[in-house]
Length: 400
Image 1 (tube, one colour):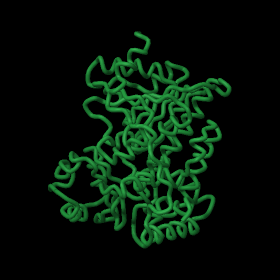
Image 2 (spheres, one colour):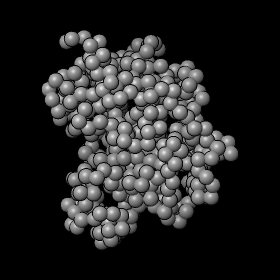
Image 3 (cartoon, rainbow, N blue to C red):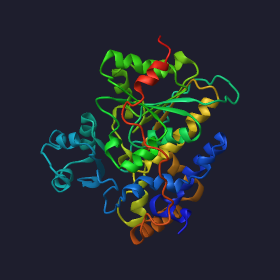
Image 4 (cartoon, rainbow, N blue to C red):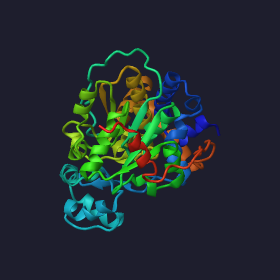
């Protein structure tokens, strides 16, 4: 099976084509030979391949998300953190220790009530095909014209998990210097996930760890941002403001900074405060609805594919903005970015053709080894230990 055929096994080919378009554009813009060797199918199925993940029967590949039936429809419920399970009683009125205990609690209530309470509590819950239709909320500060800026941009990576680290990985492959900044108290949760996947996405990045609850840590973080050409983060705006970072103000003050904001559902109301991850955002984007039309029931279309879709699109947007002079905050919500990719495919091919392609992919995914035929990437170097470069990087900064 070719790599192209493999795209039908882990990433629906219509959306793989959309991702490949962005990947090819980034490769052409940067001239990176490393990018030219990559395929969308690789990036979209990479975590599943490296961690030997499987999926199906309304369960996500990573296992933390389920499609559950409520009294009036279907919900995508994502509970990846132990603290999420501790909040189930506050959410549904009764505790649950596992999915078997959770299912009857969900089935007895309506989606609207459950989604409203889940978002108050900070749980990642979505309804397939909902909450992604309000306008793009990017803050489009007018670009300063610097024609074809050259050199090696410095990227400060404040993100975690998949979409943001993939974005900065692609920027590193494009020639950027990348500094990965983590909280010394709450580092990137992907450090405890599949080791090979974490190493692959974070190789080549210098590691800085700061106590962001302390004034000195917040001060050092602002110094780092002052030195950056591109900032990539994946936090809700309110969380950043709590540590003294106002993205809009920082971009306006700098005049040449590109700020990539990756969220679940956007920076403005109503989605600004909603927690979202790749699987529930993919469902919200309409991918599970397409899967229902293709298979007869709601299913997940691959492994959290809103993450790699957004990661590739964010890398392209970041490099384009930097080359044009920056001065832009670009909002990249997982659900909105995946929904836009789906809309573009539907406009190009028509719904029935897209449904048929999803059905073919689903048949292959269930009948064949989903890892067969795809070229496995491996890191050239170890990812740096948490905070390994903190002293060195801070010493290089302007003492202001």
